Amino acid sequence: MAALEGTLFASGLPVEALMEKAALALSRRILALRAPDGGGWIPAQGVVVLVGPGHNGGDGLVVARELHLAGIPVQLWSPFERRKPLTEQHWKHAHWLGIPMLKDPPPADEPTTLWIDALFGNGQARAASQEIEAVLEARNRTTGRLVAVDVPTGLCSDTGALLGRTAARADLTLCIGLWKQGLVQDRALAWVGRLERVELQLPRALLETLPSDQPLGLGGASEDANSAPRPSFDPAASKYERGRLLVVAGSSRYRGAANLALAGATASGCGSLRACVPPEVAAALWMVHPHVVLEEQPLGSSSFERLDAVLVGPGLGPGPLPQDPGSDRSIPEPWWQPFQRFPGLLVLDADGLNRITPTWLSQRQGPTWITPHHAEFRRLFPDLAERPPLEAAGEAARLTGVDVLLKGAHTVVAAADGRRWQVLRASGQAVRAGLGDVLAGYAAGLGCQGWASGRPDAALLATAALDHALAGCHCASGESPAGATPLGIAAALAASAMRTR
Image 1 (spheres, rainbow, N blue to C red):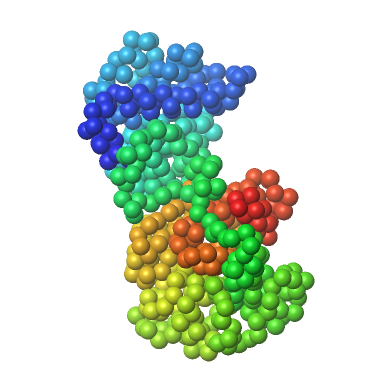
Image 2 (cartoon, rainbow, N blue to C red; image 1 turned 90 degrees about the horizontal axis):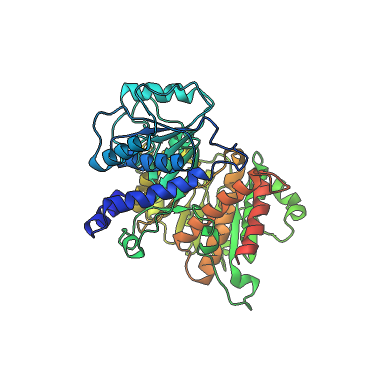
């Protein structure tokens, strides 16, 4: 965003014009927090704006001006002797308007005022002063609300990490222009609160200058799910032409995992679904998934004929461990070797991932998707595990030549060709065992259809991550009668799949 702003200013756009445009959009959003009856987020006691020395502080001063002119009591606090020239001009105008300016920090224990954090914003690189941290820490202990302008003070806008001891704990963060990568990292969840983007209507020509490996946010706009890439077929296509998927899953200990993966695959809409599951799962499978055709164990070479995709892993249980990370020796299970040569899409999840090495992945002869959570990723790529998720997943995809879905509160998808996506929306209420099995099945089903209709591009894996996250949010909000259970989310995925076709 900073680079795009530099390009705009170099083109002749005055800095003042962009600040006014951004700050007026912020003002409209903050004014909307006021309820018609005088309630809402803006109490009768009004607003305190924390003003920084840079242009984030200037944005805050324009917001203060607009709230003041709308009849809302406003106070300003700026613990800086010097401010950038444009911000100083707005400070001077606020003084002329008669907006009170506090010499001492505002009382943090007064939850009857709304605080607006306009101290630093985008590009923070160091901790705030001890005085500012103390004020924020005191405010965080109260029930008073806080709205952050662009980025909460104390957070790195690139990584979401704390820059010092603490940060402003926002109830709402209004992100200006492009999404800031740090705000959607798991470590930032406790500080960002509800995240909204303030549209700047940047020129399309400017956005087209972004590099091809620029990470893209998923779910930030209401139309994202409808515009996501999806397989398309001739209306007369048969079930076998709409994707043929085999799911290898389940064990005596994890019987439900196979059912959940098959529920996800069914929700995707793939035409033909087969399963290789243990006898104790197979015996009752027809009652839950009567459309699924069973394959006998162990798998033979004929099991892979006329398939578009295979999903391996959910609930398989512990198996023989792979050799050391640098070894090219594969697992001694007799049915594993055909996966190496399978020309269709191979999706590896859970205990399927625990049976392979990065070397095995790099030697795969067909397209491959892997869907690890952080512990599985750490076992496969110990040298990458401590990096930020977007960077870690991207490097793992580059090293192995496979597409990576790294699960988390904000799931990351990285393609082997450098493209990357991150889910922006998630619900903590939907976090529970079994959701990964549903996601693996749903992703494999979408990829299977992608293979049948052309090629399973990694963008379909990103679509699966987006659909899964939105279904979780939908169910957690109480809009689904089945609730935020794995089967409830599978049902929501099936319903959304029908709507988006």
